[in-house]
Image (cartoon, rainbow over all chains, first blue to last red; front, side):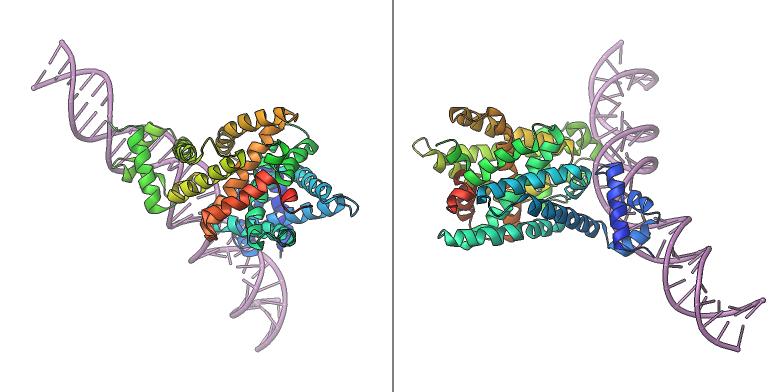
Length: 185
Length: 185
DNA sequence: CGCCCATATTTACCACCAGTACGAAAGGTC
DNA sequence: GACCTTTCGTACTGGTGGTAAATATGGGCG
């Protein structure tokens, strides 16, 4: 009897080995088990992907809280969170790419994005109301930040330009300071 | 003899009809032609997707120049460009979703992103050097803006929350003004 | 000990879609 | 009219997600 944890761990191993194109058979083989077992345990590929996403998000979360300190300014905390995100996905590069294999026009994508955005929405919802802005716009901010991180990270992994810290500098200048204010226009 | 324009137009029609899951057979049928013809004309699905992306980008471009005016402030121009982007993809919703079916861990995705980012990189590269920032960071800004627009647009099309103008307001507050400066922290 | 049933697992399959080989037909040339 | 070239359609392959039916495994009971 093989459970979710084993299959998940096997999936990570298979994806580390075969890259983001790892197939369900590869994952089953890595778990020393056959495909129907994987399907009985995990549901379908979307569910497995969702589980892997949660696995990644949790890693990013712990890396983030480890990097953020109370005495930092909000901007410094934002920068630390971005750096934690980048270094974590770099460590689990293939899993990140596998999770991001899901096309943006799928139901799973919407769930994953809404899930990831939830924390940001709560955070910026409060900040916005305190600043007199309608709370509703926080959703757009959440989506925007998720999307920006996603694409920057993907292209960064692909082109390998710059260090994580430099990339985090520029992301912070864009998302926190704003492109317009940074360039003085 | 059927050429690229006809196939492209047929692809748009087929995708409008069948949604973003339209298959190569659907497109061939819409062109009143068989699949090998489509492949001889367009190469493969990636090439067709790339052509559709260029088609969309060009529409967005004309909508953008129509919406931007010289007497506007840079911020107003940015807002107008975002609004043009959103309204254009809303008109061609399924084509947008089809193009975004391509997984972010593919070669095509990287090309499309680099392509779309090129203009932004040139623009913000100049602005950044004028502001004393290293030009290199413009790539990250380009990727970030592309990603933010992509995900916000996808979720907006899916959830249909708010008007294009409102979404553009919030995107502008995020990407132009900055989340930190807008919320006063 | 031997039989039988329930459960767990594998084998073997289907459906679907991108991409292509090969044959048929059409049209031009001598 | 016969031959050749070019163009197109049919029918296939390969590979992947997903599943149904056959099969092994193990435990209770006569």
